[in-house]
Image (cartoon, rainbow over the protein chains, first blue to last red):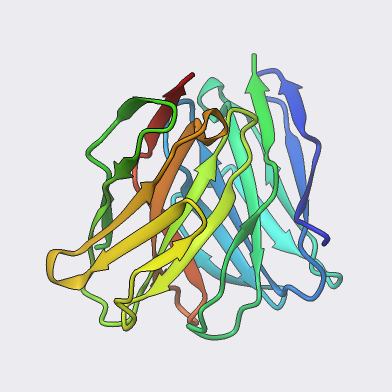
Length: 115
Length: 117
């Protein structure tokens, strides 16, 4: 079965550069979530989209933005990168629309290293 | 605010032993969902189970079992006859309703389980 696809798997950037992470949800899933997992930490919710509209927002820095496109894939744009942005970024997808017992399935993550 | 506590930071057991991972949660919601995810050394997050707040039946799936007790706000996970492949970080998570009903997950800090051959 198709899973959540994230690209790239690994990304190395320098401080103050920009990065774009991509997420392709499971087919027919309309909700996408982004999480950030720092070294030795638990995943922290950043932002989510349902039917191409922002659904909820967590502790996402103003330097980050995201959107969901008409084909339901999502991109997380990160600007003015800082050393502290180095983390594993997960995308998850689910069938959304209500508090309807949705399971979030995660991609393999993008490991971002900021030098 | 929702909170998930996994008091056990690291656990090591010898292969074939049983092991229980503890999870305690806090929420003011009457409807919520609890999850367990596995993160092996390769890094991906693998869904294991979801349980809703109205279903306190225990569940067994092969060597895995889960004990949900609403009275103590706990959702513990037991692996019987552990195997080396069970070595991973295990996260307990709680879902809360987002602004339009879509769920975001609040994770515990994880328990690193090491199975010693």
